[in-house]
Amino acid sequence: MDKDFINYKDWGRYGYADQYQLGDITILTSTPTQKLGILLEMHGSGCRQFESMLIAHGMVWEDFLYTCLQEKGIIKRIDFAINDHVGLLAIPELVKKCQNNEYISVMRKYEALASGKLLDDKSEATGDTLYLDSKKSDIYFCIYNKEVEQAQKGVTLNAEQRPIKTRFEVRLFNERAILAVEDFLSHRNLENTVFGIIQRYVRFVDKRTGKARNQWPLNKRWAQFCGKNRAPVQLTLAPELPNVNRQRAWIQTQVAPTLKALFNIDGYQGTLETMQDIKNAKLSPQQEAMIREQTVGVDYLVEQLE
Image (tube, rainbow, N blue to C red):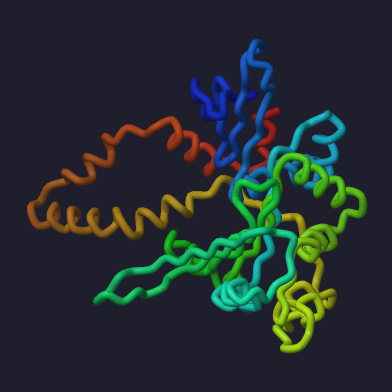
């Protein structure tokens, strides 16, 4: 394994001794006396980066998950995400239905969050999130405005990418996470697994006076979201190398305007002070690792890690 591609830190988290990072993929290790084993942690971008590694090895997510279970691995958490590109899930409407008890669920609570800017004592809403059940539970749902989140992070889409209006996340922990993976591997149809979980735990209905609550009809928009006449949800994500989108977005909004001003001042004064500062800047180990990751191909990177 070529350690030039790995960022090592001599401290860990969750009780682990140290950690190794490749892009947004983190591996935490423990000492023999700790007996914690190894923890692999990946968020959204890390999953896409890891998938590039799987593809380079001729594997898919199903192969990896099956291997984990065969090797007696423990799945502490797994999230399944459904992207709503057309706006079927209107969060304010779902929140209102929760307030009016227009839902049938084994989940015991909900939490609605809104963010915004205070302008002239009026709130300009810029985001909404709905949690179904407690965030301390082994299973809960999170529905949030992905379009607003991406805009706040400065993420820009190319002409071929469809914007995600709302994201529905099924978040599973411990035994429930393992059972969900086993169910998925039993038939390799992620759509059946994810929507089977959703419909088992909650459904939104429309109130009908004079009828028992369990006889209220299913809300049409919710039925369309959970319906069968829809393309299967794919487990695979768009593979990519560790990306620099977040850094570029930060540069565009925070750094670039200042640099432009400094370059204009240098031009007026006939100096190269700003360029010299950039040339003399010291890179952190994470930044050096990012440069290496972005300047080699996936196949070469996989070869170096073997």
